[in-house]
Amino acid sequence: MNILILGGGGREHALAWAIAQNPKCDQLFCAPGNAGIAHVADCVDINPEDGDALIAFCSDESIGFVVVGPEAPLAAGVADTLRAAGILTFGPSRAAAQLEVSKSFTKEICAACGADTAAYGHFTDAEAAKKYVRAQGTPIVIKADGLAAGKGVVVAMDMETALAAIDDMFGGTFGAAGASIVIEEFMEGEEASFFVLSDGENVLPMGTAQDHKCAFNGDKGPNTGGMGAYSPAPVMTDAITQKALNETIIPTIKEMAKRGTPFQGVLYAGFMIKDGRPRLVEYNVRFGDPEIQALVMRLGAQVLDALLACATGKLADARINWADDHALSVVYAAEGYPAAYEKGTEIKGLEGLNDGSSLHVFHAGTQAKDGKTLATGGRVLAITARGKTLQQAHDRAYAAIEKINWPEGFYRTDIGYRAL
Ligand code: AMP
Ligand code: GLY
Image 1 (spheres, rainbow, N blue to C red):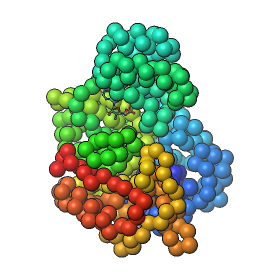
Image 2: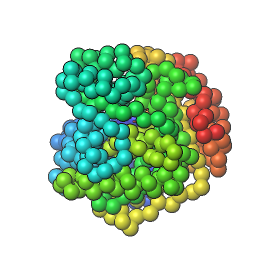
Image 3: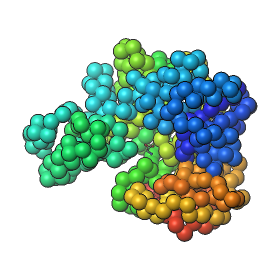
Image 4: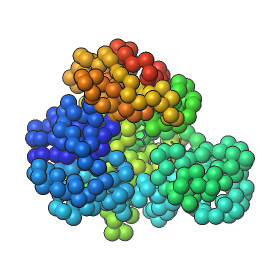
């Protein structure tokens, strides 16, 4: 079948790399794609949120399956539009994407189905929010309710910071996303991500990972989209994974179905783990970036079979074959990211680095021009390696990144440190 992937980041390159290896895939397209994706798919210049243009393209190219990568098209209802046009699509409806789009929605779902998560209050008014914070004390967590590109969360260790965050959010720092806020109990522990496919009824765990959100070594510096990741997450033991599945994920899926808005796609759940207890931090409704880069190195072509089973409602019979291996991904970002950075600088030394299923350089923000590879984004590359041990994956990834010549870039040198 012909397949179309929506998006143009490292996540979509990883998905394209895996999907292209599956014999079920005839022609692979990506909208809009990037310079790395162009090696495995035909990149087409269509806005992933433009439903009409996508339907026309799918008809012209006989697309049998669309995989939606990022959250924005899901939040805009692109999966609904495609399915209404009879196109098989991986990714939740607009209604089910609320699990990522609205933090208060997720908290309410958790309360309704008894999922284990932080106690919370939901406010549309600064005075009531401040009264709640004063009564609860610190540390406490203040969150803009809506999508804020991963920036709408303040973990306040003191009252001054908490009150200032409330003023900031209602003052419009996050625009409409901050028109209402969620205030949460601070949870201690170690964080991990759990990726679970659901066809609306059945679930299929796809793996665990841990990422590094801070820009600099030692988890210092500003929050980013993720500077590196590894899979599996040692803290997600079998017992904890089972607990997370039975006490949070499955109840959520049942609750969504009960409400007439079944969730079809990947639920990316962030958990805080302490003393054997996984508590939900948040849901996303798409794969994590760069977590999926590490996951696909371990899964390979079977990713397509799993996504197809998910979209066709056949997850009950689907299996994932796990090798007893590890993968680690290091993000190469533009100097200055996550704040302002230069665009258009040249990256050299990429030739000959990719090595079958043991090493791949996934592109997140690149463009090919006159035979050169130019950096066009904040997070630009994700150098991802697989190994028998995490140490081996780590060493392979860092050996490769050192061969890349890009003076305008930077990366963390301690990815995986907690597990190594
Ligand atoms: P979120 O966007 O909800 O994932 O929040 C971003 C980050 O803030 C998370 O990855 C956690 O590190 C931290 N965080 C969010 N909620 C809490 C909480 N209730 N307790 C402690 N840390 C939190
Ligand atoms: N790595 C974090 C995310 O994809 O949201």
